[in-house]
Length: 249
Picture 1 (tube, rainbow, N blue to C red):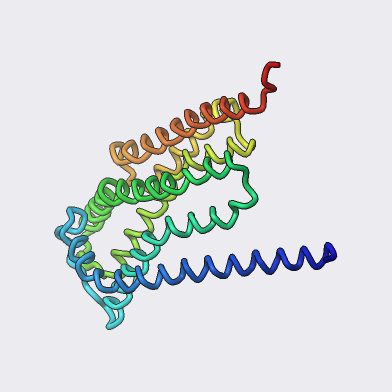
Picture 2: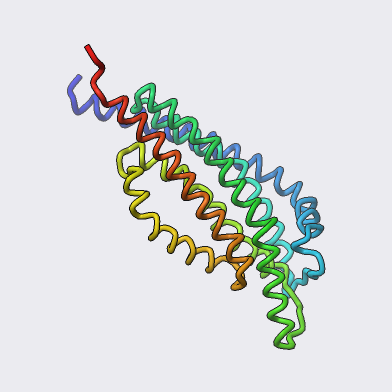
């Protein structure tokens, strides 16, 4: 068999495996979507009973508002539950090209990434979102506006608040990954700390109400996440240097 035929055969095998993994992931997504459609009314009632939604009347301004929120809730439920499988399937597809050490190291990223994302969403929903909602309500009252909130706008605002923080909570894992592949070092992180602090303070001010307490309640967790990234980067960098050092004869 020629090299060209061998490469073509390998490509077909990779594409076949990719197709199989995509089918598995899509099938699980469809199942969780069906579960989400069944649970959406209960989930929406649960959200309505939380402190962030108390005193807020959900109104609909078109016949489709309730339907779109219902479908969006089911879709996000399916995305969150399918996320670990997506990460695992990506790891399993790349597994043949990794060493045993790399495979074990990257496999641990999957539960860590999911836990950080869920932690970020939980923090932003139970801490940050209620503060922003109360601040916006006070602003509306101060200008003499009559508060009438549409359910679609309410959830759109909520998703715009919680998901950026959910992604921001992945910071330590991203820093660890970039350290392991050699793009970052602990020294670079320490020398750029003051610039990172300024950037994170700006981000915190953009996604929190403009009062001092709310700003600190968002900025301090972001700074702690950065420092956590510096810590795990130092440990990973030390292990990486030890593995590259020649063993004594």
